Image (cartoon, rainbow, N blue to C red):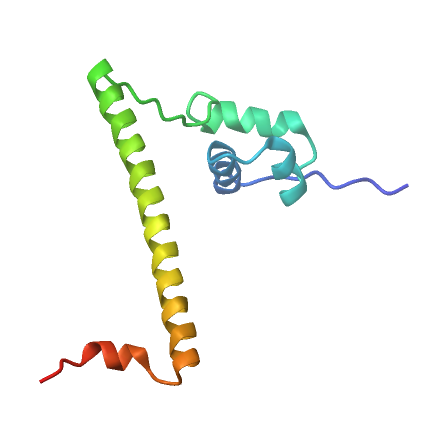
Length: 118
């Protein structure tokens, strides 16, 4: 009968696992990634080496005026993105029209429009 070896993990290894957990990895993914035997083992490490066992979470506190400004900026950004998309499409359409007209007239209209008559 073969006995299974007892695994001992270094403190640095435990802290690395806890850092990955706090960065967003799940306990189960860490178990699989490192071959750790028990869910409770990782939970104990999190309680011991983690920031109170919780993942870091960003909380934004804003005044009503700040919220309104952010909402207005987001709306303005959406309007500008739509205007840019429309301009890009219009530019493509004009370039293609110029290309088709150049082919139909058998001359380079891009060069012809750039010249001034004397």
